[in-house]
Length: 223
Ligand code: HEM
Image 1 (cartoon, rainbow, N blue to C red):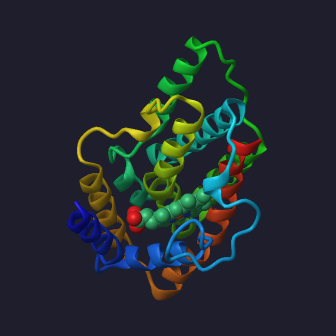
Image 2 (image 1 turned 180 degrees about the horizontal axis):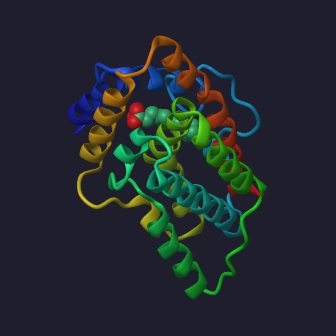
């Protein structure tokens, strides 16, 4: 319902903790064609006018899988104890992407090797995670949450244009997605309560890098 959607948007904007700040910084970095709260001018083609190809979309899925594999590996290893909080949240995407890539193979497509957008980002977050938990958690938040918001809209649009509307596993979650997201927001808020104002600012300042890397991976859809 419209009321339900409005309520969901309100709850996203206000969780009463640090996630509100993370989200607000992220929303401002969107272009105006991407999101109502976006403040950047649109460069190039507005995303709704993208003309995706299966080959480009496969590149995007392969690089996305690499990044989600890397994120999960980092959380598993938990160089900093707070990473362990974000293990097995139900948001994990690597297994789902593996299934989707299998499906493309069965359909006769060849699945490419990862390219520099995914490789570079994986190396970057892996190194960062060993020394800078605040910055790493910024990437964790942005990558996972972006996919449930804009990522899902893009997926639907691409599927309608080139996959006969086929809904990939990448866009399916077990159980109630808004509850899964809320659980992670609560954990992020709790973890950030232990941070100083400087550490919080440092986390927020990393958002731009997350946009750059994730934007480059999204652009593979058009490659
Ligand atoms: C939220 C669109 C790229 C990070 C949103 C929302 C929209 C959107 C419409 C608001 C959803 C809502 O509150 O109902 C898009 C489009 C993109 C794009 C069309 C590209 C074509 C990105 C990128 C990042 C990002 C590259 C950074 C990695 C986020 C985050 C949120 C968000 C963190 C907040 C999600 C939440 O509140 O749960 N996006 N976005 N987005 N986006 Fe994007």
